[in-house]
Amino acid sequence: MTLENALCAVVFCLASAVTAAHAQTVNVVVPGNTLGGFGNPACCSEPYVPALAVPGPGTITVAYLSGTVTDAGGIDTGPDGAVWNVTGNQFPLQEALGVAGGPIGNFDSLIGTFVAQSRVLAAGFSAVDGTKGTARVGILPTGLFFIGTGKTIPVNEAGTLFLGINDDNGESNGGAFTVSVTFVPSN
Image 1: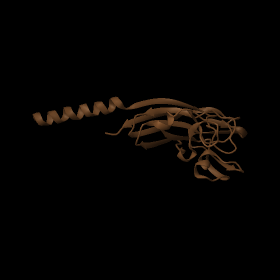
Image 2: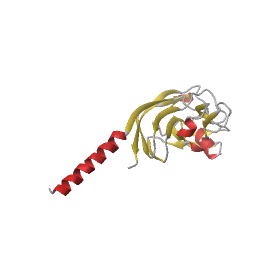
Image 3: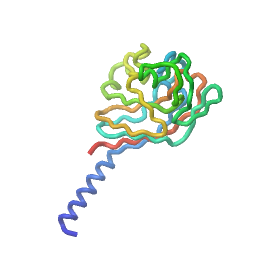
Image 4: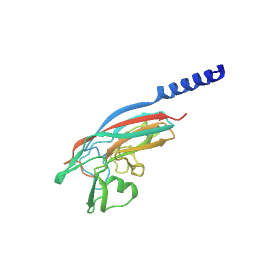
């Protein structure tokens, strides 16, 4: 190996070590009643779980590890959710799209949203639906997205990934999903 190749190898290893040193991984539990007040009508829910705050830019990867969410009528589902006929209500992912009712394929699924640091740090911020007057500053439904068993989310700025469940009534919900959340900064 030439001196030039050896130096290049050292520089590559150092660059890889710096990137790896800034990567973050955490395991997060998302209880079955973590609905953030989304959906219409919304009932009996807890705020979204702050999974990971990142300095941005980079990618966040969410991977399902274990658990199920239980609901009324004997529903016991994994993070991809279950098929459900919504009669008159609006579930969080439907609220994000501005639609309501009809069959959905992701009832009680794992969902999330990435909220910019400037919003998270705003006075009065709470990890709940910001359109219903329950928080001075909250999460906007248009930012919600499906995660299911896993998803990689590119982020362009500092902020926080919040996780929740796609349901409008957490009164009868139980169980939880455990996921791994990893942030890798852009090079």
